[in-house]
Length: 111
Image (cartoon, rainbow, N blue to C red; front, side, top):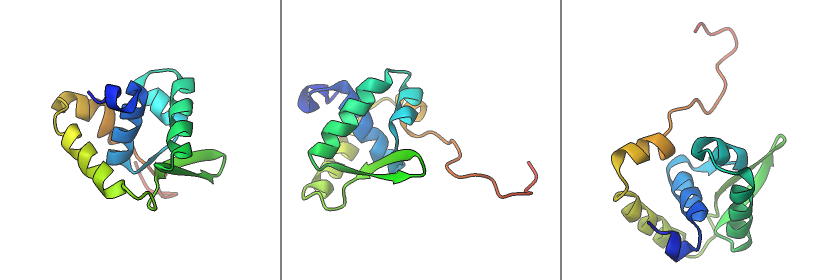
């Protein structure tokens, strides 16, 4: 949908994923979208170089999120939300609104 504007369908996927999940890492994107890891690594690198996203190490994993200091962040998120609303609902649920656990279960808690 926005690949012509952003220059890459991978960047569109990254931005929509960050919009709905707040943070991510390259291999997570590769697993969710079942695409090459290299493409996501290059897209994340390009977005970080442009100042749209920032990264930080958490353990051995480099996590990416929107840069809160990006001057057009509010406008970008508004634009992405509007564009996201035009995606088919099954596509939204399959790729972007994933209900995987994001943190470990408390030790000793029964399943």
